[in-house]
Image (cartoon, rainbow, N blue to C red; front, side, top):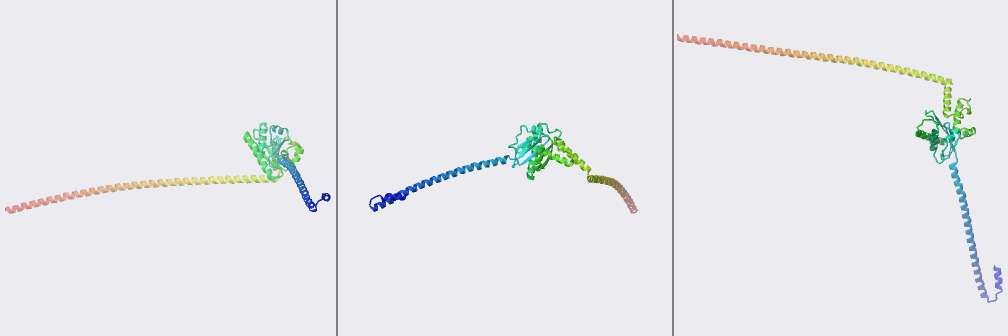
Length: 367
């Protein structure tokens, strides 16, 4: 552009100073226009850049937001642990990482029966188990005589999770029993997740398979098919029966049982001996107390008798003393009276003698 501008200015005929000033003016104007164009281009470029950034950010947020939402959905709906509930109906509840049920599956026809109308999603494990047990009650799977066994088996490799799930499930069973007024025996167990794979292949609930394995440990001749359709209470009865037989067949257990019986017999004999000794001692004490009481009573009676005799004797002495005193007083009175009479008599004699003397004197005088 500068070359073309200079070529054009060379063809202009005017004073040199005017040409120079005109050239300078035109160059400034051209530069201003060029700068304005660059500013517009720069502004447009920045706008487009910001626009693309905004589109990219929106796209990123949409993608990441969708991914985050999917992650949340996956977290809430992906089972990581399981709880097997077996009566004869066998069902398995899938539990997510928060311990909340996400699904429930039936393992036999009876399980399908109690699942009718049951939706475990959005409920706590306790509530889900309670509703399943109540459904079992309503469908006559809980015996009225209290003989029913309800097996609760947690399926997880985490012992802490197993403890929490087992606690919640047991609370759910008890809540249903409280509402229905029924009585059952609750059997609680935990198995590794690897055992669940075997159960799925056999088409049997992991909880029931675990009980059959326990029975097989006591009697290896038993097969899974022997108890595939059995009630849990029948499996538990077989286990208890085998456990009792195993104890009786073990010589060491027989020795221990004999020792226990001997110990109980010795304790019984000692207890009886102690009881006899206590009774004998009590009898002796009672007899001694009785003898002491009789002796004390006899002594008291003798003492009272002696005191009474002594009192009577004292009363007699007092009476004798009184009689003696009275007699003495009478004697004294008699003596006093005799003395008085004697004195009177003597006085009378004296008076008579005096009178006679006087009369003699008078006779002498007369003479």
